[in-house]
Amino acid sequence: MIRRMLCAGQKIFIRVLDKANSQEVGRSSLKAISQSSFELPLWVIVPNHSYLIEFYADLNKNNKYDVPPTDHAWRLALDNVKGDATVNFTHNTQFADIAWPAAVNDFAKLAGQWTGTWSNLTFATSAPIQVTVVSIPDSQKVRVTIVTSGMFGNPQEVTQPFVGTVSPGADSTVFKGPSTWTGKAAAKPGELLGSMVIPDLGNLAIAIAGNFGLNQLIASYVMSGPFNANGTILLNKTGGTGVKQTGQDAAPGTFVLGQNYPTPFNPETTIPFAIKETGRAVLKITDLLGRDRFTLLDEQLAPGFYKIRFNGSELTSGVYFYSLRTVSLKAVSLKAANAKIVRKLTIQK
Image 1 (cartoon, rainbow, N blue to C red):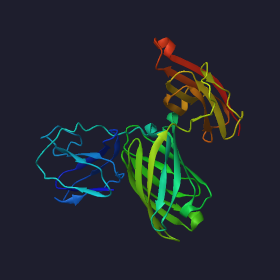
Image 2: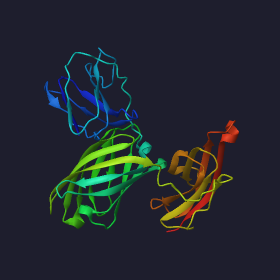
Image 3: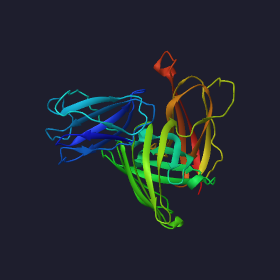
Image 4: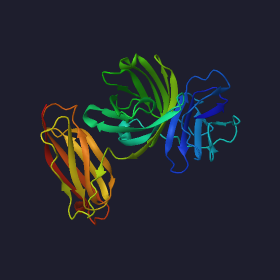
């Protein structure tokens, strides 16, 4: 967690970047500042990392960044941190043009595998956690599936899916849990805030708050009800949406999109494919009208044999298509660089 003492009288916007990769790890804002001294906490720090902190005060109240001195902006460094940190500065001095970028409103960019650890500080336990984010383009949704080993080190695996609706241009999305949960988690670029209840566990209430970027999420949670506990969650994006190499040693001699299995299926199936040359691979599910329904994969892959699991629980019975397009990094012409294969996909419920 990072805290800053700021002295200003306007709306404040702040973001934090990891120096190692220049990636934004979280952002926040504080509206209608009425006091000259206040705190703005962000959950962004990983020990032994170094960060840049960029922030500005919207002096002309137009809700956008303007180069100083129209707005007042600063860039501060925080190197080799060991834990919580407080950064102080003097107002009206040492302005910097931070070229404030727009926030990520497209939550589909978060699609992929996220892995990490959730720690229960009250009971001094921890467990691995894996989160899969899948984009559903035509319905402007993302599906978030959480897999963990259970509470307080219980070895039983727990899988919980959440579906979030994303409105184009909006600054937030709402994730609704399955029938065994009630409540919602609201996300806006850089920030996460939620409150949920689990009736099956004696109406256990869970409140969560944190910050995230395109490759990192840090949050705190508080449990209350039949038992009280608090802890933290740390996640890092580790790859594409569930794509795995099959372990075959030889590089494929051609570009292949295999038949999914089982077929027909309900609700999950496996799609095998092979990449001949290093390049970008895009795997999509479309309907009979050619509309994108899911983007399962969009990332650079090395030559090899792969497979990916697809959950079609949100599709109705019928015929769909899955297509794989690759763009080779070695091709000498655009025609040679692009290859595409389409196959039929049948779901039967």
